[in-house]
Length: 183
Ligand code: HEM
Ligand code: HEM
Image (cartoon, rainbow, N blue to C red; front, side, top):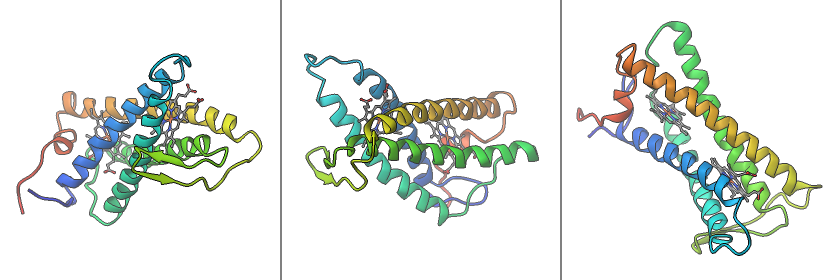
């Protein structure tokens, strides 16, 4: 199984990073919208945000590792016309940018009062920037809109992947799904 990328295909590490990140983002989005509607008497009232924050911080580490891997590896060129290729390249960076912005705003909500974030009773991440004026509310609003932005962009990205697969019938989606066995 090939671990690293080549200029024409993704290696297994990039493929695993991609699908773990996608799954975590979609899951956190749904969990986030659901958990803010819970009432104090619901048994998930404390548990759901604790899971949301813990998974979010693990995702932070995952996306950092993914970015380091991407920068240290060849990157397969997008397939298609030159405009399409440029759009795909910009979209990928925009997805990274929005992911980090959502993660950072989430961290700023949770640490607004100076409290550290417990990651599954496993380790704690300290508050660094806290007690800014209205930090919790402003970061909360940003978090919500950035999360929606990320989901809208990801949906466009998904539609583009499906267009490549079903209309253009090229290898774009296949090479993000299949592990290659050369080398
Ligand atoms: C890509 C990752 C993430 C996504 C997609 C996401 C998504 C969401 C969504 C949709 C909400 C509901 C917002 C609302 O209706 O007001 C939410 C709430 C929240 N998220 Fe995230 N989140 C992510 C990561 C994080 C991280 C890393 C943290 C903290 C470490 C975090 C902390 C929170 C908190 C504290 C709330 C509750 C905010 C409130 O009560 O208004 N999130 N998240
Ligand atoms: C929240 C969801 C998602 C995010 C944040 C995301 C993000 C990304 C990023 C950043 C890349 C660039 C490759 C890299 O840097 O390693 C990429 C590539 C790709 N993604 Fe996604 N993705 C998501 C969901 C999906 C879904 C649901 C599909 C398919 C239905 C998909 C299909 C692809 C394909 C085929 C590529 C390779 C494109 C190419 O080779 O030009 N992604 N994705």
